[in-house]
Image (cartoon, rainbow, N blue to C red):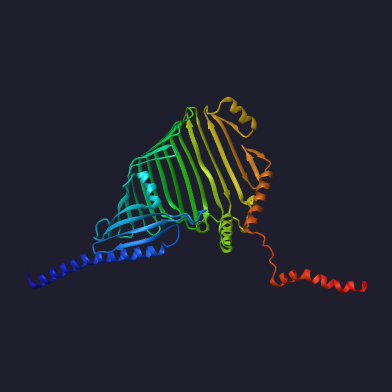
Length: 457
């Protein structure tokens, strides 16, 4: 091997050796700085960093973070906060999982520790592993041991479960799987099997993303169901927010009846996103709008006004189910049109419609005759149907035009109440000069009356 090749090989090996030390050093230095910044920024709020102990190392660091949970909206502010500490060990050697890997465990403290030990057993703790990805994504895996405890005469049993969590500056994902949850006592029982929770949030503060809860089966002393799913989806497009919640049950057995393929979907669409952000931020900062400044109160009114004048839609697009005797389906929508002049006018801009269909023998003949007698339902080929619509002061029920005066009056009253909230009347405030004149007026009155009394003598 020539001298030049030896020098090149030595240089390459030197660079690799330098990188092998530089990357762990940078990882350790960054972790140390980030933890200190996090602790300084979390001295206030509901989750407070009470103490940080960090031992930085070149290839491995360790430490603990003591947290306190404080409810800033609690009725009793003197109540001692719950506390717990997170112990961690971090490896700064990069791998395919990320820049650094870590192990962590949660240790409750004080009264909290005693209560947690009653649930998970003495000496047990919540623990897991994690990694910091190259793109800044934090990932963590957790194991929850079996839980057994009693409360008010009810015995609870929760099988061991696993979960994972990942997050960056705005997004977060959480997955949790549980095989079985059982509660027995007081003459009743509650059994849940095959539960899974999957959260995928694009914006944690705004709540955009999807949340899905799947349960294989639920049974109590009187009710049982199979295939329960609850799904929530919120999306943002430009300055509009759409949210939809759907529930479905494959089989429901209750009171001797068996229902199948039940589905319910509720939605809110077209919400003004900046106004929603304002309401969320102020509501959180003021304990549910109960401790607002005058400026915050004005912002809340402005946000509500903008939401109502920019239009929205609320409805139940789907409601259906089937039984041994037939099927039922329904839908309903309530739409508030945008206000061209920026004024609140439900009487003018509100419209609504919906329909209901029942087929088969879900209703007996007496119930069918009663529904037809009211005039609000009509016969269908295999059952009954009913519908309604309201727009521009015109109310129709099953194609019959009815007097919409009561609806218009109610909407006009709602307009007055909403405008009263949005634009409260200002109470006149006397100026300092007027207050001084009012205070001196009673004393000046006798003095002015004295000369008039003199001639009477």
